[in-house]
Image (cartoon, rainbow, N blue to C red; front, side, top):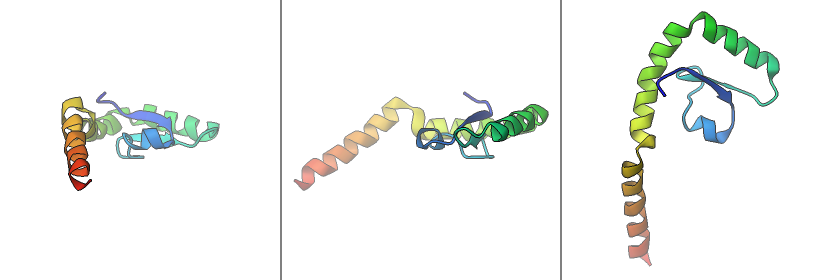
Length: 84
């Protein structure tokens, strides 16, 4: 989404957020950690967001384009079928 994000540190979010690089990952139930990251983001949003936009665009190009991902899956399935 081309913005600096704050999310829970779970496997699904780690696929998209590189902690400190393009967002912050906060442990589950870490209220103080979340509050600190919100303040840090608010204080330095322009710098953090500028850095995140480049990384997020690249991640989306790599992982988020359905047609590219389906082509990769088709290639993998074809290789698996040919090994049988």
